[in-house]
Image (cartoon, rainbow, N blue to C red; front, side, top):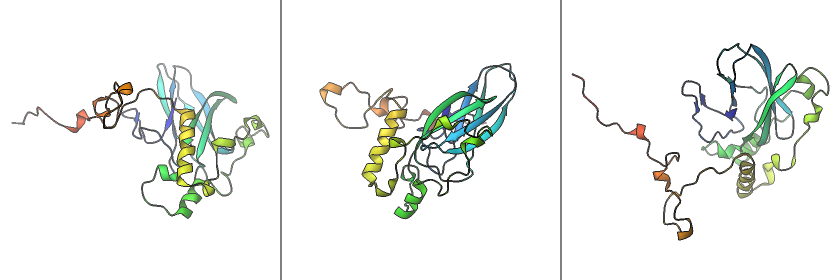
Length: 223
């Protein structure tokens, strides 16, 4: 299971390498399935304070070999509240998989200048909620009330936050959902104690490393 946006089903990759999702970005949930019969599933998105933000029903076709589905749940109302979101996939009323993903503030996904008022509006979520209730998940009142509401560090009202505090809050949430696998250094000399860290230009995974597809060599002219 992977969550992000800008998923390319042909290449099978997210073009948004960091998979950061902003308040206005669509959400793509990529699920790998084992062979099996046709199944009806329901995908539920829960925002950082526990509100049901989206419910999507879809069919998974019968397959005799492993397959991939790209689930794209849509919201009735925008924008998404920044913070840690949850998603749950249900089949026959039971949760068969779940996970989390981060929605970052608008300033982290849009490079154009925004007024403070506009940015705050986009970072607070929909004024009157998403138009759904917990009982809408299965049509049974209170069926999933135990999913509860999450507050604390997973959602903050950002109107009183300076940019530095917003950055710190996002960094804290990133540490909850990501772990460091590999590191490289951008430039300059390193202290002897960490001198063995690979330069980013010499790594095969950093965006600062050369792209072999960016240069063409040994071309044979057509006759």
